[in-house]
Image 1: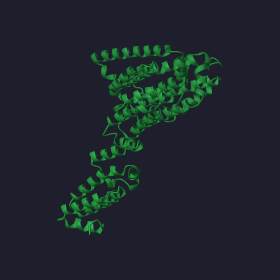
Image 2 (image 1 turned 45 degrees about the horizontal axis):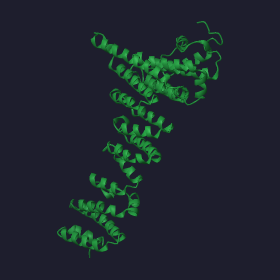
Image 3 (image 1 turned 90 degrees about the horizontal axis):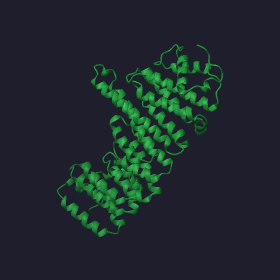
Image 4 (image 1 turned 60 degrees about the vertical axis):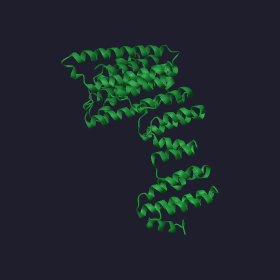
Length: 417
């Protein structure tokens, strides 16, 4: 191999960079499925690399990682070692993207940056199997480096046209694949990966073109192609960082589906975005409640948390009553804010809990019922309704007069003489 003369590499295209990296990688002894492969490739390439500007060097290093990721991701059923190697490369790319002056790189390496995103797009669409990391890298390059430097909508419209063209190519290939005897070699996995990339990438272009409804439609389709909550939350974070609160409100309302996931962690994050919106757009609160309630029972913990955060004490108690919660499952400290600001709201909660425990017809149930009745006595006293309490406990004791063990517990608790 003839060593490239100093300065020559800076004149080459991204496609030529990738060819040059591939030529040097041929001399690596290990295979892409071994963990040391990435280090060996980088060492060989770096040794032969002529001096570049800081911006070109950053972009070249990114392309080394893209080369590695493509080599390490040749199958959806790779060995464990190969998966570890690919994961390490993905992490290195993530670290690489947060280092360097991205806007300076975009300004001084603009054409080559766009070529890099083209390389990623074409790789993700034409490669027999490509990881979703290609989508993540593509999106981050657009978010951090291209969109901030865009002058008008033209660049987004052009990229959207390319993505639409790629979609037509994939659809044509699928059609040919379905009628071909050898179509099974293409595999179910690649089609899913290709579609996810194209759908999410197109949604991003629609976001920047302020065509949110079209973006939502694309993401709705992407739900059938392994769309992850992380993909959706990236849209939300961009709108939050831009301070586009009304658009973020619309996105949060639209994405109150499986798109944001059903796990506690994703729902909590969803709730934090709503908090940010309501703080700036108070009239959005009603839509926040609609979005959270539409995901019940999955969003139960989030709904309860928000009811307490927004001091909706009566609604919180009503919800606990509706789902049959046990008051004793809550620490006294947890209920203190309600006890202080809306003590009467707790009355039905404690009453229902005490009655349910009596129905257990055992000593432990009676002890728990008395514990709640003692809380009720304090509440009635606090509300200055002692006469109503006296009438209630007298009626309660008479109604359950045949339950000897309960009567004993009531006397122990000094609720009756």
